[in-house]
Length: 179
Image (tube, rainbow, N blue to C red; front, side):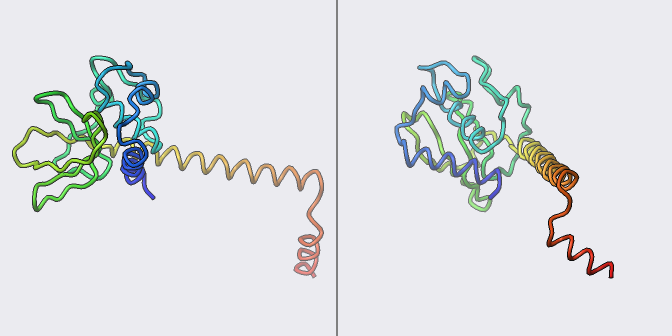
């Protein structure tokens, strides 16, 4: 699995389990106000549940896209964020984009529920923000954690050998190889 597919799967799983949404939970998890429009909370929560944007919180009146400074893209990929400014500021998770038809499928919260939507991109009005910087950051952090865990395992094994000596089967193999 990838971080991108994890974002999409989280958004879909939430829709399947809670089609009416859980706006208060989303608000609590991302630092938003209960009772407010919750489409952005739903998107940010999907990113967080996929292991992205872990330290990002909702900023009232601003949201999360501006502070993150995610780049705009003309060719959205799964997990990217769709933003529709007019007639209301609305955010959704991109599920699929078909450039040959100009159609994008999104998972939208606050519709007044969660639902998949298919939109034509060709008439404008939709901006897409790439989550690639978040993906790259998470992949770097994942690699660092892997090295740290492996280092701890090796250090622990070395300390055990220092304290207890080599296990007998390994000791016998070393003696045979030395002979």
